[in-house]
Image 1: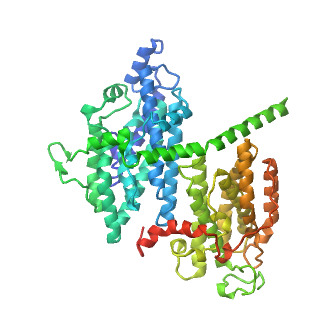
Image 2 (image 1 turned 180 degrees about the vertical axis):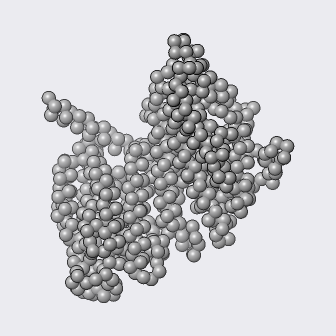
Length: 354
Length: 263
């Protein structure tokens, strides 16, 4: 654990924000150290790359990198960017009906943050030599994925709280180690994303806390949402380690730092106490403290369901993609107009300058 | 109608019944501006995750957030002026459409992106001089709200005017759509400037500023200013289009389903 001492014990993010800050400090320290000491600049590109990784320095866009490293990063960063953009839909679903003006403002700002995250993640991917337009095409044509969690519906207002608490919580657990990813632009983007996500998680937790301490109907609404989202949230960490296809190489490249199962366990351990504080029940009769492992035993999510949702048969896959494609198609004439106007202005300025 | 020097609180029932426009004391005036901003925010937020570009998604949410922020300040203050214990949420969630005082322009459906930009452009070209005048008015709280909101309005106006120029002077299709949007929304601007000498800022005094902005931008955008004589109105008296009731039904549904609950 990095820098867990930064955070208060009862912070709903389980001290993760402290880890983000520690990663940021490490990034600055590495930059200050420079590569000179540990890394021989005159070496051939492959050993130079290996030296940089081994020295916990950052690979930057102009450095040589193995083609597979580049492809892995493009895939991962793009899928992350797509997830931010598609993830706007399930939460955006409640902006118009938010039950108070304050909650409406908070939710609107949150969904706007997600658009912002998408934008700077696409920008991070572009440093690897691919354009945002190409990546958007890959999403719209179904050749790249987004996080499967967004293929579940947000049926009640409590879902907005649970998406903040559990889904953003799981995303942060996944992403905090990425703040130390070996690729500089991604690590820096993740530091910014994690800080904002931590804020979102707090807001979701607060929504649930209010509901859980409200009327019986509000409390029932909160419990129902937890019941529906708990296992899909656990599945966000991906298949069990034995079945995970990309893990070993990503670990060696220091793109990934912990296995799916390690992160899932960390998330469960973080949530149990928070659920107690909320007065809500996690829907797992097998959940209990294991003193030998110093961790909670828990029931695994249904990985067959995860595979079905990934392959396109979740409750909202078709709806989410149709929404994205429609927005893109209906905006085409606007983007064309903006390009035509910019071209006219450029010609006009040339004439003025000539 | 009483003179504009009359101090602070005018009870709604003191209005002259025969007056063709609703005489606005601070409460009704503030309520109307709050409703404009709230309904505008609700419509703009409908664009979230649907904008033509990702950058525009961020920009439209930004403007929606500004409008919502102004609405909250104005409705909270309107509740204080009324003195009947209604807070921003009571005013937003527990009034029916006949009690809303927003102008018709903001409740019109979003239409395509050109219609949304036409609506935003006209609204911002009205709100900027309005909030600027408000910033110098005698009521300290309204002056503070105006001082904050006018900076936001200046950005809204820049943003909408840029799109009106881009779409008007972009492609053949965008020009056709932008002109249709201007033609369709223009009749609704007249309501914004109905004279109300008793109000903290008389809307009629803002018209010249508005016309100057609109004339310049439409000309740069190669668009024609419509000459329609049709001037629908009624929003300030609570007589709305058919659209508002649906907008409120959606906005209020959850709040009303749990009477007395805290959120």
